[in-house]
Length: 114
Ligand SMILES: [Zn+2]
Image 1 (cartoon, rainbow, N blue to C red):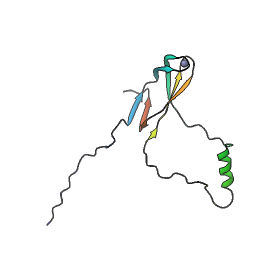
Image 2: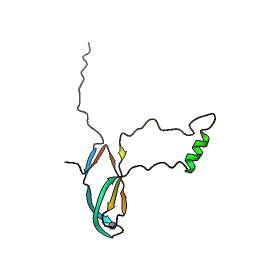
Image 3: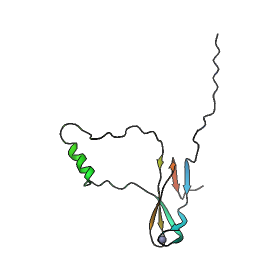
């Protein structure tokens, strides 16, 4: 007779790192236009509106005509559960905007309570 022993181990994330991040509304950082450290207001970069008259959009519209539908494969399955969050830093003195390349985060809050 076999006795099945099941050990329930606590789940441990192999790639454990910061999943949530809280960033202050104002950051003091280098401005390449002022060439000194100035105060910057922080916001999250969002995707712009797709241009309807772009070459690819016009071509896709043309290819979708008639028989046969979608011209190229659309991504249906996503391996990643997070998105890279890019920060937009705007200088308060000259209003020059720099984009800070983001890291993968599940949740990003700006100026939230800690
Ligand atoms: Zn500046």
